[in-house]
Length: 263
Image 1: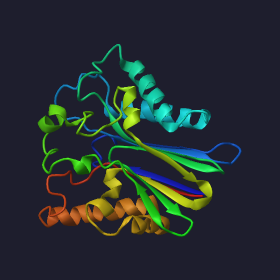
Image 2 (image 1 turned 180 degrees about the horizontal axis):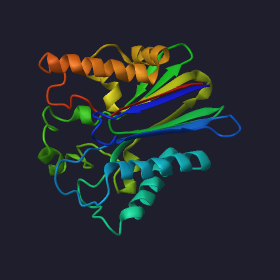
Image 3 (image 1 turned 135 degrees about the vertical axis):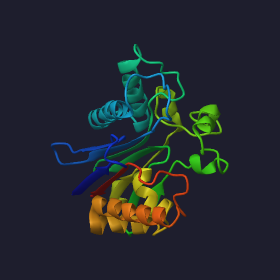
Image 4 (image 1 turned 180 degrees about the vertical axis):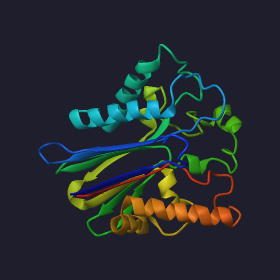
């Protein structure tokens, strides 16, 4: 098995709000990967005394622990329990009902000799490569279905699109959001590799259109996660110098995380 994980902050002076981990059992059979992309809050009060990295570390740690130790639980149940555990850790000090309370996108994959289970919530992506080389992207496309311009300001997000019907969902303080995740499973025999990307790394395909998802996975295989992220950084710099044709109002550099698992 090959397993590579790289996470790079958008800018060195700010903490990386992405979080990623993988766990392999001592038996060598099966494993778990978890990738979170913390949502950067707008300037101002968010009702919480903790940072986004504090939140993603605790949520991610709970997800890895439960995914690895509780094979009897489905991934949606594990996400629900992990959100509840994280919320309980700061319920006494923070206003968890605040729309800007710390939150994150989620990708979880768990595999055994028999099956690969997956869960995706919000705009990170999981790639599954079949034995024949075809690549399937598991996506939660709610953000893509919002009207153009809906997310151009914090006010628009706060006004009713985040964790609301007709909007999009992230893991924050409500365990019930787990029912909104994209979940499923596929036979392990039909998958030879998988990859998880936060949107800072998936820009290579989604923003800059350098290749499709199959090309993304091939780049990961040849250059590794660091190679993919380095290429994204080069494209961001070139686009910024050219007048932000692709970036437009997006951050020049976002936190970027990529995980590759070859089974």
